[in-house]
Length: 514
Image (cartoon, rainbow, N blue to C red):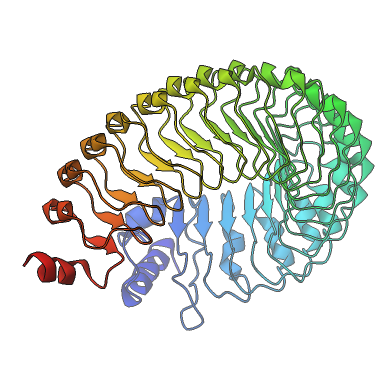
């Protein structure tokens, strides 16, 4: 069959199966020059791929999710093919002829049922990216992979690997290895030979320790060790001076090596859900650190050097045992997010007011009895969570937080609110349930954007008439107070849609006010 006839046969096949023209060109001249063909999720058991060997200009072929149980023979004739996507099929083996695709740079075989790779794969010297992830029948890395020394990206996640073979050290051009969700208990020492490696994903394995040679990966930028069984890190981790992200959450770490303070390029340090009792004293060396997540550990205080982390933007220290913060916490002037919930804090330092970029503060479940007057200087604050503390009163300066939109003060000991609470012009949500508030200030009626107001379980028997001016109020919760009849101001609230206690707000409205 001539190329023209072959091309016409292909277009007829596309018409017959109603394949979208944007996926498969209908013009034979356009088809003959196409360099990419996307048949993802189009083929199935009842519609096999015809002979496409005439598509000599093809560079990319996507046959992902096509229910293929074997590789169509004509594919191996595509000598200019650079990318072949066979993910999500039913392949159990590949033909030796696959190696005839000598120009292939990307071979994607994820989510199949492969048990090995053909020996001929070793001849595919142009290959740069190999994806054999999600092949649960693949128990170990095929030896032939060790011959692919041109690889820069190797995706091995969600297989059943228990170990990495020594030949991994020969793949010295690798820049990325993804080994997430395997059963690895150790890494080979010669992993340090991968001098070009920039990204190493090892999340969800069974690693209990790391080799000293890890520190030889001097170009590494991302190291993800989330959800393993690590008890300690090698001191050589401090040699990873190009590292930007270190993910260590959900391990069993009891301490961090002092050398971690030498990671001068580190942006993100994620160490939540471990057993850390203290942080190293020399954290000041982390001059580029922007995010630190150390939630759910056993920290009781922060080291003095902590306040020198001048680049820090997000700080999460919730679910620890902290009783105090450094007096000069205000030195962290770039901080926008501060999470200190579920600790044992009894007070906040005055320098908290120096955190003028702070936007979100989480202080739930502590032992705070008051807030410092300086809190009013946090002019960027938009959300503040203070539930389950022992706060008896808010400072007048609290009403200076002009950007504040959500305030959570449930389960405290409040008796009243500041008289100038109405100055919070951006406030939309105010949660004051489970306190001891006996009366509300008249200025509460000036909260022109308020849409949710929870006053449940307080000691309110009457309400200021100004509350009738809350034109945007949609939800009002008054359960567990002392009033004996519905407040008159409620009939003036045009937006009110939800009211508690009640059966239905509209029914009550009709019953009491017609």
